[in-house]
Image (cartoon, rainbow, N blue to C red; front, side, top):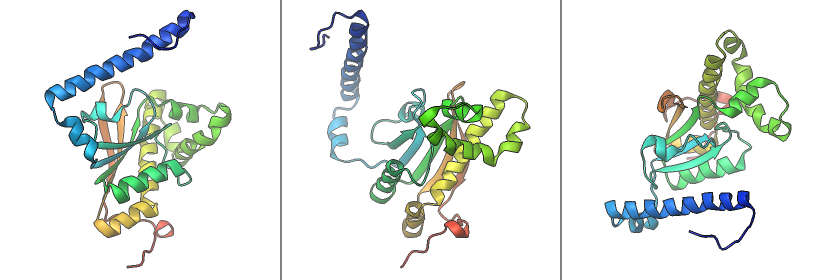
Length: 226
């Protein structure tokens, strides 16, 4: 396949060839899906009714549908650096609102992963400029568990454990939102899960599940009118 944009720069040409390869692979994937299920795309284009909202890390190695063996239409996805759930993030809150109130997902999964660059950066103490503001949310998880983590002598085990504790903390942040609490009251769902993906073996490791009957701590509990 050739691009409409011509360039004599070898590096530029190589970059264009890389993107062209994605387009070729897309056609092959589309043809393969139709071969297996001729009505797949016509059915998919009509509506979406996923059971899951996935809040994951932007890391290119942790693709939700690939590692769970699912196909398009089964998982609604939001990703950011280090799978952060923060109450001032309008992007995340918009996704959460749409998934919970309109799609009525049955499960919300916060998925971190071992070897997370954001977690490593937050533990390093280095100045990352504008990224410091985002890393502060991860540092909050680090600070909350600082003594226990520092007691661990193995550096990689310490990083892995913070990835797990951070994912757990983000799920508790979800439970503090009016979006989740209202859904719990109105339809007894969704369930909230913290998972961690291990890059070294490709296995998802469940950490906690919070059921819709969870009692949120009083300062974070909303009272809704009947």
